[in-house]
Amino acid sequence: MTLKLPPALVERSVNSPFAYFIYDSNDDNFVVPFHYHENQQLFRVIQGSVNISINSVPHILKKNDCAILPSKCVHALYPLEKETKFESLSFDVRELFDLTQNHFKLIKQLITHQLEISIYYSDENEEDRIITSLVSKLIECYKSKGRASVILATAKILEILGTAAQMSTSRECNKEDINRYYKYYGKSTNIYKFICDNYQREVTLEELAGAVDLSEKYFCKFFKELTDLRPMEFVNMFRIEAAAIELVISSDSINEIATRCGFKDPCYFTKLFRRFKGTSPREFREEMPVKLG
Image (cartoon, one colour):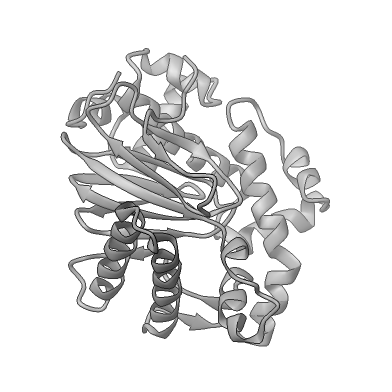
């Protein structure tokens, strides 16, 4: 089985810097498999709940919760309830704003990780609710299709980023962190992309290190600092997240899914699945309220 991009309603006009998507768990083959792109993206849950994995780390978003995804991050989503719907708006801040201008300095700091903001915002949290409300208004601005909808949506992007930068969850990086960003961020992005493109086959430590032009010894140190995991532990965690998606959307056997996600030994796959997901693959599949396969 080849995973396909979701049959989401996609809207983007040639005169707009935004692309809008709406996803419905009632659609056939509904899934957002692991992928990456240059644009930033906002996700908002309309109803139900979804599991969203960013660089293989899972998080649950409920009704009205939202996520602000940075450029090039590897991500995937699947619904956790029947009748789940969520929407997203994709854009490139470099296209929206001239970042050479000093008054957009904060935006440049955000996309270069000199200033870090939260990725996830819960509508149940009072401070976060400011962001979830702004994201809702942003999407409504875009969907209105009025004469000034693009201008108003662009203004909301500024308001969201500016508000997020002032929140208690934001963090201004020190000089050491900034230097680390310039030294490591490009490599970390490339290694996540490499894993996303190659997790279905056997991957060696030599290949992982070579993907970012580091020696195996130095790569292991770099990767441990980046993820707090050894490289092959992270690859296996990524494979488990990919397998979880397939268990939801595919009727194929667990052994077939394990093999397709890079595991030669079904018993080892089950052991790791239980470690990362807290349940066996079979129990996970049976307990999922949404059956999309």
